[in-house]
Structure formats: C-alpha cells, structure tokens
Length: 377
Image (cartoon, rainbow, N blue to C red; front, side, top):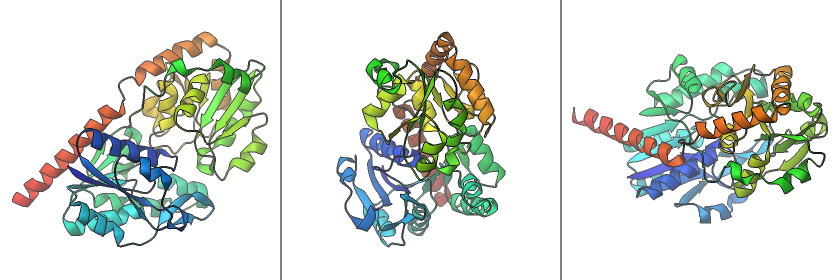
C-alpha cells in the first residue's frame, strides 16, 4: 500500500502529532508498505538533519513560525503537496491533525480521487479559548469542514469521538495511540539521577510536555509547596520564563527525548499532568508504562487512560487545590504509589505501537474497500 502522510508537525518537533506521524511511518515500513511524509520545512527551508534518520522519504514544504510560538511552524501555500501525492501514486492520504498543510493534502486527494483518512489530534477549540478568549465556534466550523471531507476521521479517545460527533463531524471512529513499553519501563529507575534531582530524598513529582498556556502547568505551584516534594519539569515553550517564577523550587530540565526521557519518567514517584485540552495525552501513557502513578484532569484523553483510584487520580480540570491534594495523598504513601504504579504498567501493557498500527491498516483497508464499492455501484 502506498501512503502519503501529510502532517502539520514531524521530528525533530517534539509533540504528539509529530510522534504519532513518525510511529505511523515506521509501522508502515515494518509491514512492507511504502509511505511518504510531507511536513513543514525548517527555518529558511534548510534540510532537516532529522530527515536522514526518518524511516521513509520526507518532503518539506516552506513554512513560517507561528507568531508568539516559534517552535510551531505553519506551512505556506505550495504546489509540492499535490505534486508529491501524485508522484508517489498514493493509495491513501493520511492527514495528521489537518488544519493548514492537511487542508491542502485533503484538497489534492479529492482532485486526484484518492481516499483520505484524517486523524484528529489537536483541540483547536480549546486553544482558541486559551489564546484569544474567543473563536471556539469558528474553530469548530473549520474542523467540521476539514474532517467532513475525509472518508474517515480517527479520534484518539472516547471524549474526542463525542466532541466530534456532537459538532457534526461524520464517519468518526476510535483509534487510540500506542506506547513503547520496551523503552518506557520501570526498570530504568535511576537512583543516582534521583539523588541529583532530590538530594534531600524528596518525593519526585514530574510534568513532561510543552510549556505553553493551554497546558496549565502553573497549577503545580501548590504542589511545589508540599513538604518533602520536589517538582521536576521537562519540556520547553513560551511559558517557561513565567513558570520558572511561579514554580518555586522546581527543577527545569528543558527538552529531553529518547532513552534519557525514559530514564527520567522511571525515576519519578508521581506524574502530574495539568492540561485540560488533551485529545489523548501520550505523556500520561508513557508515565504509566514506566510504572508511575498519574494525577490528571478528568477531561479529554486522560479519562480513557487513568483508572481513578487504581492507576492514579482524576481531578477536576483547572483545580489547583484538587491537584495538590491528589499529589499529597500519593506523596504520603509509598505503598499506594507502588500499587498504583504496578496497575498503571499493567494497564498499558498491550497498547503497543505495533497493535495500534495494525488497527490503522484495518481502517485504511475499510476506506479503500468502501471507495471501490461506491465507484462500482
């Protein structure tokens, strides 16, 4: 099967869209298929060194940085999209979080008569509320228009499925995300790292992710004040200066990836996620695979991932006091952390990228079969 993955983000970007697109490309290659990735280009159109390590060819489209958030790049209009899809002789076009580049991929697929599968990954309506305080309705109209043109939309959580269906998006199916249980595992717990981060033997409470307004990381300010607790923040983004001031005593490690990130996860005692707009939340799943209990908002993706009072705690969104109270409960009980951590690891044991990659291939096949049937009718 020849597949073009049109993605709004791709490594070296570190986010859920980029990671999922990379894992999708890897799985297609492992299964003997022929993928091609299209993604926004690096600054000045320079070749990205990360592309040399990609599992398949990568076509970069000229882009500009998002104002106020230069880590995010937005593709410019380009004829490369349609030309690359046609040259690859794609059977399916896979649109990862389509909004700008993905819309062009959708249009090109329609002109060429190629089925398109759109993967919903970003709560743009939530972002509109966060960044401009308005525009939620406009964001949903945009999302509905984009996804309605696809042969199938894949949503990563039951909450995302409900949101899409309630806003009139047709042909929605659930497709969750995988986790690398070989990389993220409890056995990587590093006592030397723990001593470096918490020389007084404090309980380590970690956040991993972008440091941006929608992530609400400032809700951890109360956790920083808990006795015997040290907060560790992994990631970068525009909110970092303000968070350094707000999270007194927290350790900021910057962006970490790969095996180094896995070692940090496994060395935590509690993982705390604060963002209420997660359509899935991969970092929660990576923490669970590492055997770490989780505190997360009872909203969006974490609702499917965290079993309340079994693998961690679900707390009301945007509730700093509830977040601190849940962390304090876990910090006070090593036995409870151990029980929840073992349950967390067990809960994600079968959620491998291989398993969810094979589910994706079933979706592709069903879409192709439906298109052939419609043409023959």
